[in-house]
Length: 466
Image (tube, rainbow, N blue to C red):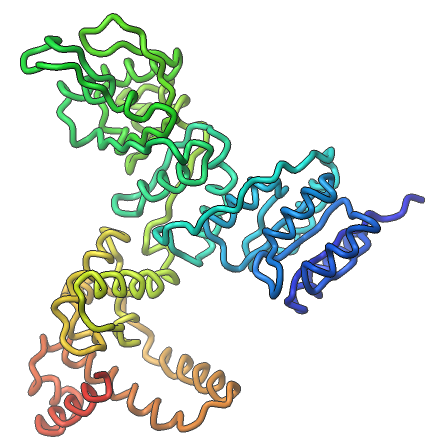
């Protein structure tokens, strides 16, 4: 009977090692555990495993450096990276260094076992080392499952050079995804050229894309290089591709199929050396069925499809995004640091955000300038935030308060009664003022307070905020 395959687990979190080892052992694998990269590298000199799971962030050498060293010492090892802090730059670096796969934490143990089996079934290949990337721009932000999966796929697809179709509602950040794909690709040193096809009149779109010769039409006084030429060796991002006229779709299809084109009014054949990434907020499959979009062009563009979830579909990211945008807006305005109150963050999480991330960023720019004090309360938010907010469960706050109290006490916090009481007052005052449009007398009456008491408590609350 053949001996079970040995799988190594490298993670400084003992609980992760325990549950992953238990799942893999139950699946019939032999397991060896390491709490840091250094001990795994020392053991690698004696006997390399066929498959290794490694965390990215660890004390000492991190998982990416471990992956790089494995590529040099034991290129046949199939490495599966794990991380609770998934981002595009890290996942892309892992794939560039030859990672077999990338698992965002928390992951399903059945998925981990399935990946281990696929890794064992694959013929070992040499890992080609690549330089570690510089820090990525902090534009794509999120810890929700949908965003972690998006980051993982971007990391895998970026270096492939394949065509990508990005879908998602307006304001979700489709151009940010396109830029991340370019930044993590082999074309990163070459231009990234973006064109919003919906913003260009139909009669000018051909010239914008392919350029024109002098005299090609009235007003064409000189030769003009189109976006395909400007993006040579780099990436051409075509936003809102669903709005492109059918005649131009036919021309674009020929260019994508042949890889060559002529400028308007020109005879010189030009090579189209640009990776094309397209984006749309429309349902192109439905448009193709209605004859409004060419199915063959859709197939050319839709080699890999990346969907960006709407902001309301990843509410756990709203507070993170809001704090990020607020900090950036405050810094740009040259103001003192500000923060959202817990009640304000709760209101932001409840809002439907029809304009998605772009709308949230614009709101943060507004309150960074207009809100007084260092803490932004619900009274500082525009009324529209509350118009579509769903009603909250009346008793939900007590459960959240209990969880907070238990966590604070477990962490050794003191004087939490005073902190909780102050926060309760702030929340009630902010909610009452928001309900009554900032009218203190009406807000005080709704809370069962006198106007003088309301004014005194507001003054005390603002002193604490500032």
